[in-house]
Length: 116
Length: 113
Image (cartoon, rainbow over the protein chains, first blue to last red):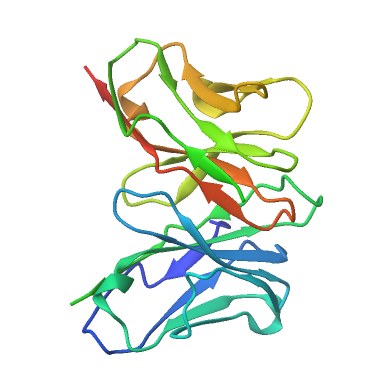
């Protein structure tokens, strides 16, 4: 399978702990996105990378959140001092920059975070 | 700023009946619109997208959507649904920089036998 993969698929943690999620995009996709989806809602944009550069960050991405994409390949999303409000599905997507707009974003299966 | 409104949170329909899932958008820039489907415990899969040209867009699994600029709508339709179409459907609009999607709240399609 050459789609977007995410690890882990599920994570349960206690409030105050740090967690890190990994996303492996489709090979040679230079654009990578993180979204958050809470129960019963549509995904909300968190951040965007073009190659290794983080070019866009949402106001939803508080200072407890940090994302990296070293070498422009896989990406990690870390949440420090987790809060119960962080419980959500974290989705990763990637796309190839074929045009300025309209490229299809391919989504991974997501990491479901539960903060107790 | 862009926004997407999906007017129906749930749409129940019998198998083999037609269905329309409604989507209205607000955007001050060029409009690029998408419909994604999400099956339980899975990521989102692209059904179709409108970039330009013909306002009637055909997608996978027999779905189609019509872009209506004057009504700022992009409704999704299927003439005959199957049980396997039961899923959550999301409408989305892309920003002008081409690096972010804004999604609606989703519509849960429930196909009954």
